[in-house]
Length: 423
RNA sequence: GGAGAGUUGCCAGAGUGGUUAAUGGAGCAGUUUGCUAAACUGUCGACGGGAAACUGUCGCGCGGGUUCGAAUCCCGCACUCUCCGCCA
Image (cartoon, rainbow, N blue to C red; front, side, top):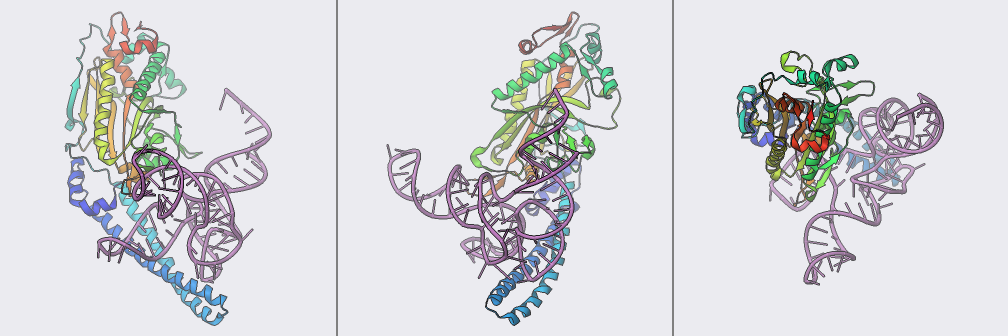
């Protein structure tokens, strides 16, 4: 959620930046300013009315104490009028605040200056790539066929017990997945991130805090009986651990990592490009989250990008990094770098990580602040990234490491797996 | 699922209708100091007004109500804890 004060000071700049998302925000921002002014004026009126009423009440108290009942009764009548006025003003204030809130909820984050303008993924900017794309032997096949061939993932079984998009991992497939999770967590904790295990269901307030609600309500599974949501990413419970906190400046940065399953409804997307592990309703992910001082958040973002790079380098997977264009940028992000691994047998890139700086967009909703050296309370910056999303890394490994003899295991994972080939 | 108790600031904790949310602790800042510690002083938050000094309103789980006046009385809701039952 944007800060009204920022809109007041930098409206034109914001409009220009939001245009990169293909959004003409001039009217929305104008509405925000109008709603805000109405709210402030109403509050000024209300405050004045209440101040007078308070003064009278105190006087009445004193008059009664002194036994001057008549004088007290005269004042009582006056407060009656003030009370009616304040009631009406209070309603107006609530209405104005509500309206302001509603508009603010519909405005996405301001893209960072590095973000290119653009409408969709074709306008994303490749900033880096590494790792040779392997030349596969004759007869190489996509991962869903490999999964069947080596009996390591069963998609039909998942359909039987739940539905499409809920695969069952089996044998060495399950073990490889567990190995990846352990490996990712080890890499993250070695880099200084504190490991957490967090709830997989969250309440409504948490959904609002990180911005999944109210905009993307349909993306989350909702357990209506208890009014809880299945998490679409660990970002939600992890970031919300700090909701409402007022930190000291030297508490920053706070760095967390956690493994969770992620649940996404993603209704209405079927076809060849979502086959196999490409897109699922339930998948595993290891996430990293940082709460940063505003002056250091972009340095931290670069650090996160480097960290993910290192992991992919160790796994020896061919990958590239994209800076998302305005049109592809998520609602809450100011800037996002997507990591994509090349899926050789499918001849396409698969997104395996998304590293973003949200600046104050989330912390403004979360009321997550710190006290700076001047004693002022300031909103912190939040950042997060996947390190990494399991199914597509798995797909990348299966396809890129396939040989006529079987699927080789990346060297760094062998100690975690206890075997070096799936055959 | 059943019964009971509770919710006050960063934490602990007093406060059953009257001007100011007592007190203690933590953290932070300042003073003092060879350094550390100690001591002393200051410091709750939100939203407004003001160039600033300063200042107004609100906040005792949330929402209503009674009253000139509510942390305190009344109604509804949420959440937490304890015990019982069930249970990995």
